[in-house]
Amino acid sequence: MRYRLVIVTSNNGKIRLRFWRATYQVLVSVVIPAFQSSCHIAQALESVLAQTFTDYEVLVVNDGSPDTDLLEQALMPYQKRIRYLKQPNGGPSAARNTGVLQANGRLIAFLDSDDAWFPGHIANQLAMLAEEPSLGLVYSDSILMKEGVVVGHAFGQQPQHPPVTFESLLAEDCAIGTSSVVASRDALINAGLFDEQFSRCEDFDLWLRMAFRGTRMNYCHEPSLYHLLSPDGLSSSLYLMKCALIDVYGKIASTMPVSKAQEKLIQQCIRRTKVRSQLDLLKQHSASGEYPLALEAAERARTLAKSAKLNWAIFGLKRAPHVFKHAYNTYERWSHFRDRLRATHSARSLKRFQPHAELIFDEGKLPPRNK
Image (tube, rainbow, N blue to C red; front, side, top):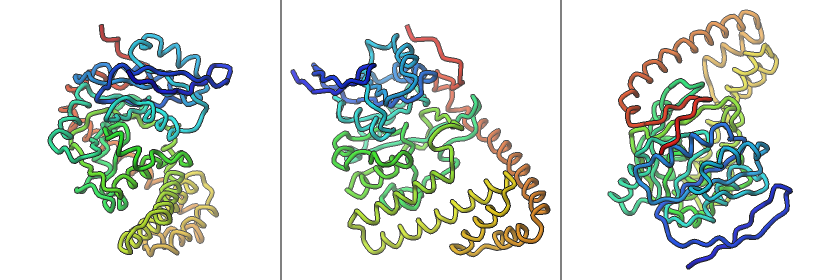
């Protein structure tokens, strides 16, 4: 019989030490970080309990959430099915790290508290691992939801170009969605787990370190979960996400023994991401009518990349900002119309996958509990 020391915080903030008795070793540990997630956590847990594969444990890590009372009420019906851990707020990296370190499973399956798996998610990922035993991480496509409506799928927005390697991850030719990941616990720990200094792109940083260390990765083309696009999430600001991406690139270049070719690729990625970040600011300031700030962003982008569109934008912002505003608003209306058409087409093409999912992601509407 094995024992583990678990550090748990009480409601009054005091730290308690508890020995956790583990009487068995499961194959998969499901790690769910919880922060302001009382409205969604039940649906996430229902999707776990609906899995066709059953040799798993569930760890819910309360990362100092301000809605702890509501969260614990939502967790009451599941208290016999989960391990509930509490800690002071440390961000998503700290919460996932706690879950991984306290896990009993050989494999770790990550699930964000506002996402939901299809019933066959774990079984499908394990089938990939069984087919290629040398793999240390597998992931899949996901159906993207916004305000209860299907708006596309992850691989549609970011197509994958195998194989999954350190270089393809750097260049974003392959992109890993965290809630779809099933990975070797040992590989996660050996790579150093999630860097707790990052609140954005912390997962990207870890996947890069794992790939660099030689962890083999692959993916399933078919979606196996619903991923909620939240306007309030940490990934909702495109500009801040790109700033975090640049920080990750810089860290990898300065802390890992990359080759000259890899260093060159990293610098190209940094330059490209800086351009994109300034374009995000250009759009943001143009939409809010802050034309001097929009002009500054456009000029910074032009110093990094030559573009006829940028030249026209700078000319318009300097000479005729009101004309530029009209042209930009027209472009935005066209973009929204195009995106709606794409979302409609994507939703139709994804219908063939949805019969496999017993949970329909709809905020405010939770499915009945399984008997």
